[in-house]
Length: 129
Image 1 (cartoon, rainbow, N blue to C red):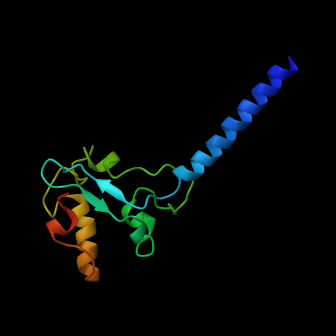
Image 2 (cartoon, helix red, strand yellow):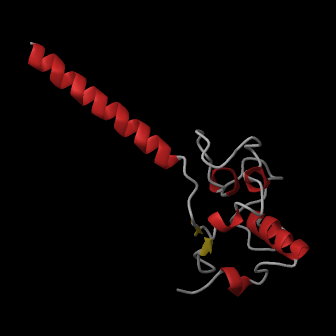
């Protein structure tokens, strides 16, 4: 009986520590994010997420999570959660290819142009493999 209790306690302890370690890793912002929703029309975009940490606040892009900080213990929703098939007609769709309707084109290109830094032409982001 004591052996069984000890085994259960060890298993629970290992599970708890594994959960803590996994949660810590899960909250680390990725170095890159591959945006492939437009792959049928254009090559996927590899977004250098880590390179933007010092250039923008998390909420600049993750606008529905105003208090988001790197390493925060919250679930970070991918852009596609709202922008792939928007529920509201005024929400920009990732399926749109135009510069004025696609949320990435609007946010990224507008920012790059305003700062005169970063890619702003199709082939600079949509690179064939």
